[in-house]
Length: 210
Image: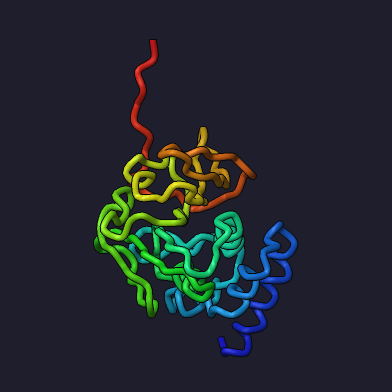
């Protein structure tokens, strides 16, 4: 696959996947049209780079389809200079997009998880649900996948008014959600059913039912 072919596929991805599916933030579109996603896909799977489905990684994780990443970025309303806590950085594609949009990115990835090598991005290795408290407070929390519950440990690392963009698993269905932190409490709104990668380590605690 040549660089020209990848460039053509990237253009097609922007036109046929993003623009037709409510990704209308021009800064997100510009970033995804510029950043070479193939550089963040394992060599043996590069033919799948711009296909609208998850791409398996050797670590047992998967990359989200481009549309999922685009929708998450749009809902995060990234502004230049934002301090972003990125959970589930995977191979670094979302981190590269955020950095190209002028954000200060701290990407959290599991020990033994995918390698992330993006200039200017701080990478923290550890449990995804623990975040990176040393860099708090953050203006944005972007969870690159779906979780059953956003843990309090992550909410506590966010500034008042911080924006949150994530997927939530509800009865086996993954939904795109966004919201804000106000006075230490997170409010999320469900926006659309969207098939996305489910991240490990975010199971909701069992609640006692009378």
